[in-house]
Length: 486
Image 1 (cartoon, one colour):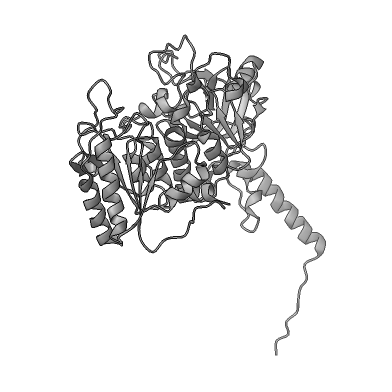
Image 2: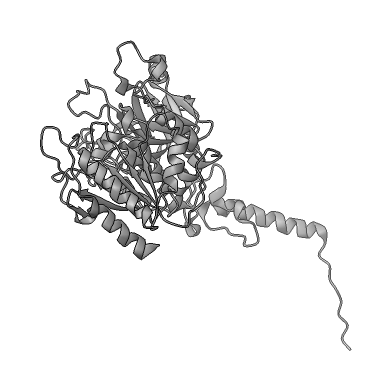
């Protein structure tokens, strides 16, 4: 029987072998020739501080000191975009200019007038001021034939970029910036486009995005601080108070900033950093290829989850305890939101006939019918509550149709316009909200994809008090909807 004799390696010899292996590893490692399979990845040569970063067979990783310096600089990144509306990480601001600091300047959408602009009105001169400034971190040209003319942005070295921007004053974020100069475009235009781009960003990344902490009206005054004689259109707060009420409901606890705040920042000659910003620029949207006469033409083409507006609707209705019952009724609800006496209205006899025919729907037991005339005397909470329960809405063209946003997907809206007019201000809102839109032209109606091209001839355009409608054109279609859906 064989006897197996165990042999134990002396500890000193084992230590000597291990030391020799480590010496070889550290000598050959930087050359890409040494590899010890049982060592963890974090000890591989490419991860050494001070190594050349070339791991030969394992890829490449820079460990140059300039890399660490670059990573320490907060560079600008556009993470979501549609003309007029942009989600930006690390946006800088100085003396009325929005500044993009990047080593990838070609990733910034061009032309820059689809990003941010001085004014909506193209007739107002820039007077030498740039709304968008790009500082491109790049090395000197490698050939004397390469010139700075035609480059994207201004060339800056990494060291100069660090010196110039690393000490920027950090502002609260996320910040929603309305770069518009007129209050009545806020909810249904500049905000809506921004919310779509923000919602698309959440949809395509799966991220849970935070609520905005600040809403900045950089070109508009708080109403109380506006200079004497300032045009009311230059206040971001409309007279009825809709802009403040809705924005506060969207983002409880939000802080508002106005033109005066940004004037003081410009006067300070400091550079400011906004870690996460969403910019809404009405002229930029109008400059986009899909604008269709409205700034959100491109933004509303971005895919989003079906509930992208339901979220807002829920926020607006949150905590509601007013007189309106929010429960779904057994019968479909039909509302005629009339505008008589507003200056944009039906001729009296057609208005009376429409009221009669809509009330007949109730008399026949087909629907619950209401005739409404919203005014500043009705709290916004009650207005939204009423609209949120409506299945079919009828109204003359006007701001009341912005309430389409609070209707349930699958609802319908009838918009009354003069026979010769097609003004597509509100049909896109209906489409975006999942609401079927009908444009009524006196004796006929059409759906958006089949309506005539946009236009409204005559000196008064859409602002007329002699709009005609054949009431049964509306109510006969309502009957079809009720029969097919309810």
